[in-house]
Amino acid sequence: MILETVAQRRALLARSHTLAMVGASPTTTRPSYFVFSYLRTKGRMHIAAINPNAHDIDGVVAFPSLAAYAAVHGAPDIVDVFRRSSEAAAVTREAIAIGAKAIWYQYGVIDDVAIALADAAGLDVVVDRCIKVETARFDGGLSVGGLNSGLITSKRIAPPSRSN
Amino acid sequence: MNDHSFGFRTRALHAGTPPDPTTGARAMPIYLTSSFVFDSTEHAAELFALRTYGNIYSRIGNPTVAAFEERMASLEGGLGAVAFASGLAAQLAAVLCVAESGDHIVATASLYGGTVTQFTVTLKRMGIACTLVPGDDPRAIEAAILPNTKLVYTETIGNPTGNVADLEALANIAHAHGLPLVVDNTFASPALCRPIEFGADIVTHSATKFIGGHGTVIAGVLVESGKFPWGAGKHPLLSQPSPGYHDMNFAETFGEYALLMRARVEVLRDVGAALSPMNAFMLLQGLETLPLRMAAHVENARIVANFLRGRDEVSWVKYAELANSPYRTLAAKYLPLGAGAIFTFGLRGGREAGRAFIEALELWSHLANVGDGKSLVIHPASTTHQQLGDEEMLVSGVSPDMVRLSVGREDPSDLLWDLENGLRAATAAAAKSGATV
Ligand SMILES: Cc1ncc(COP(=O)(O)O)c(C=O)c1O
Image (cartoon, rainbow over all chains, first blue to last red; front, side):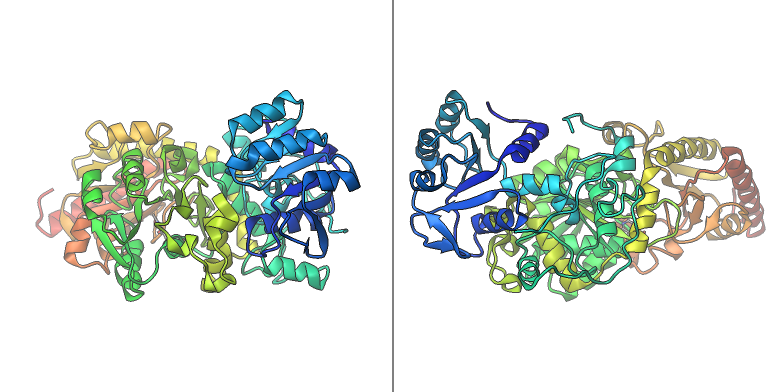
């Protein structure tokens, strides 16, 4: 199912425990590195990097492929795609093959074939969103930076945790 | 949490201020602290490298200030906001985010006098040229755009002449040239106009005015839509490696957040014009009642404009809602709830009549501000626009007989009573000095 609403994205993040990030970069000025390091230090999910050209990112071992990751950790709850749109379909086929529950296409990763494949295979699908921004929307991180989280609530939001 | 979209009045009360995560305090606490401890050296390093969100030092960010910023972003329909110590600091930041020495900006000419001097004197000294375009023809704006132009700037309602900008036309022209449209929305406030809905990319405010609403604090804010393609190449300050941040490329690293990030971590950090948490708290209080206050301001402004229009002592009234206003159609489109509460009129009898009028007023305060709850009056030619040369003065639409009113929220009958006394004094002064009324 394609998740289009804020509530659906929030529920996905809340129920997910493992995330494999395809295209995570060890280069510290790359957007994928920012996202990787943010999610890792936020301590919500177990985060893994999938990058055949990297040995590790900040000491976290990088797997050469989703299959290699799955052989050790099993199917991830979310596969996060930080690849060119033209490679999205191939990544999606791998994600389906290892039994990932959801696939998340980062900003600008938009490929109709990939989306249709994932949807047909029963995965939850998020398109053209940043998983760091959506995580920060719900944990108060956006608000710290004066950014519009869109949240209106009379309930207390737990202070951001930093255990990890 | 669901996907309900909340209305303007709800957001004016709630946006940016869920209960305090630490104490459960329902009102926004005033975090009056210069600095914030780090959890560890690793945490500190992540914060400084911008890889995680968090507070470091209140010149760059502060929880009370952030609550104000988020509420402003919500009310303007923007992606985020950065607050500044004043309106002038916010608009300077908007320029410095995209322009450097050797660059050029284009602005409509009918602007707040302080903005005119900021653009034509201070920016010029910094090597940023500005073309002020007189009149209201968007094609003249287009003609002023040069290869090194970085932005187009206007005021929703011009100070003091009250011209209403054709925001959609200006946005289309700016975008056709790869430029952002920056709109100073001070006179309308987001309760009356949200320029981003008409294509504006950056909105600035002198929050000193209606946002604060009580004439207490000096403050400014910059809101961004998140829709402008900062990485397209026209704005190297955002799309090239920044020496101020380990050669980070803001557009590549932060995507739609590029300008907001640069506004905070480079411009605010280095210019240093930070808003105090105490003032941010005052502004949050002000915003709670913004929609209610603006409705009351508009109601009184209409009464006062109609009163003046019917007076022999008054030669003209420029309020965009009046039948004879050239801006009536634009006001109906961009300001359907009301054309604001600040407008000008001309007094017969020249300077002497003007002086007598202002001095006879008991209730209207003679001062250089607008957007207070209290009614205000000033003679721009001898005050706010006095630094301008004759030509700039004419170009910005200020004439010697012009009186500017900022209509407050008193009982309208009291406002009219006071104006009546002022007009009587003006007539007497004009008669004495031999001028005909
Ligand atoms: C339309 C407008 N923009 C900007 C400013 C400058 O704001 P501040 O005085 O908060 O720096 C003013 C102040 O009068 C104004 O009227």
